[in-house]
Length: 86
Image (cartoon, rainbow, N blue to C red):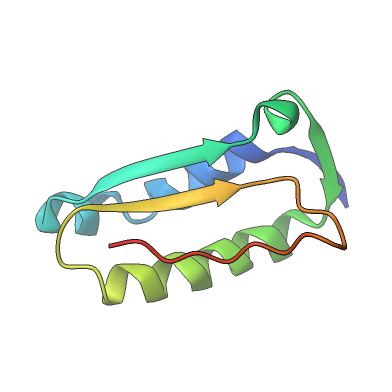
């Protein structure tokens, strides 16, 4: 377990898809809530990377044009948010 910078973790995951994204001409987007931009999250680095890799690889597989977005929001237990954009 470590303290993680969410933006840095997202950049690292996107870097693994750099070649494929260029070949499909996809744009990367990282959207992090303002309240979370300067916050370090205490979590398991490997699990966070694996989770984002899985989600991004699925998104990449089904995206032919446009962009791939990792969006991180502060969601409370009473406020769930799911979205899908083309």
